[in-house]
Length: 629
Image (cartoon, rainbow, N blue to C red; front, side, top):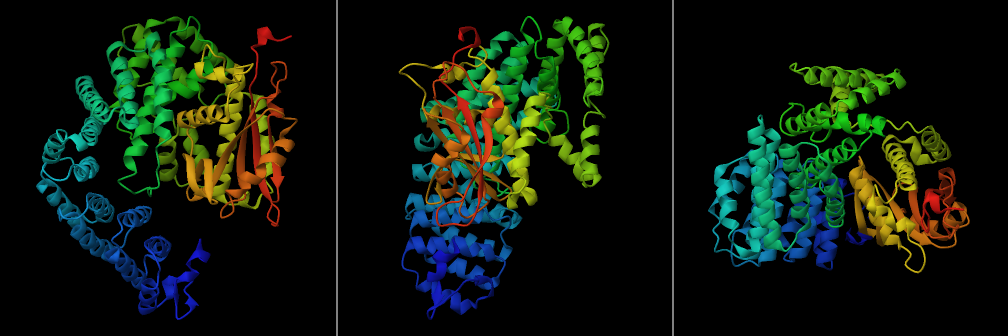
């Protein structure tokens, strides 16, 4: 990006490091910028040196003089990505934004972006927060409707940080303003959902969930189906159903709706905020609630089968995460809210099916050396005691995270950090030796990539390889009866699937997994649009999705498509991922999983840099095993 700003010059000399430039040089260079686009780009570029006093004054000069609302919006985005905003800059920017959003004579779009900017700069400054709260409480419903929609969003964001009945009253009033109704009702629903997370009794939890669902449905009605309201509606429906009826077979019918809502939302979800940003919290919370609802529905689907065929998977991937929902899903450890709901439903379901005790005993006998054996044994004892009418305690109290804490401490973390990290882990152990060995083989071939030697790139690379291997294993084994969305890989004849089918399927899988941050159809990657953009702690990579009906091997696929993948990676790490829908007709057969993933290398024409591309293909045009000859 930096070469674009050789235009930021003074007397013909490029300013390559604004952090060391003089204030008069920066201001003179800003005056010479030719357009609002150049000013916005320069603003975002200079935020890298935001701690320098001269840079702060230059940023304020651009912000104060810009009258293009779209450019102001881009500048606010860049401010929101900063880990911290210096107080001097924040307070001066507040005054600039205030002069833009207070006058009704300003265009509503400019006022809206200025209000959003004010929310960004007040974070961490209690004095400014109070001033923004005061202004919002003075807003009246006869203001511009489009602007009031943004007022509702900002009000809800502050309400989650500073609960206040006056703000709830303001949102209730805005719920009657046509253009702002769907936003105001959604924020009221989120407020009640937060009450549910803090609930200490069953009645309080049920009251909060029911009220939240009512607001989400009003938001849906007012907006003709906004995706985030739809996602929350189905999540609260599942949670209320579990609260009322426990885990039952009909919950499995909600799984396709949960997945569809997640995919529809993820197509529009963009999270460019810093980890500390108040604006980023709602997006992260949505996927937490989705995770909780999905885990309960999946557990119900498994528990209500005639036989518990996948006991090991359920024990490791579902039971522990449900018993520790507040820790693994919501990063809380007080045992209230979601824990109340999940633990009650799970224990009641186990009580109804005594033969699960035999399965637990069998699992323990076959997995005596497992790190989870002690916890599973406690679960078995809890169910036995409850069946006998004894008062049961939580089966997973002190020891659940102990083994993981020990591992993290051995890795060099201090005790406090190890304990905090373990409390957020949703532990699942993959016992398929073939998949584990395949993962190790893939990682071995990536070990000579220079980026693999750095901690954060290595973490992203290893985790994405884990997810891709698991996705290959999942899609190779799970049939249409268990997962109706698998139908596309069994489609034959003239109506073959397209690459978008694979992209949506993988997005759904990422949504349901402990995946890094990702965005679908991400623009401005290498000058184009990446199918799936990945980011973890500042490290960015991509997944390129293709379809091909003449696949000999993965090396051939890399020859055809790796060049496009590397085109998105020219300013970051030198590794990416290529996911291919293989339409080659192999008479209905699929290759062994070890043939479906490999690591290929690519040196683009005119470059000396070697890229590592993980190539994985999903076999379509398949038949079920009983149809094969």
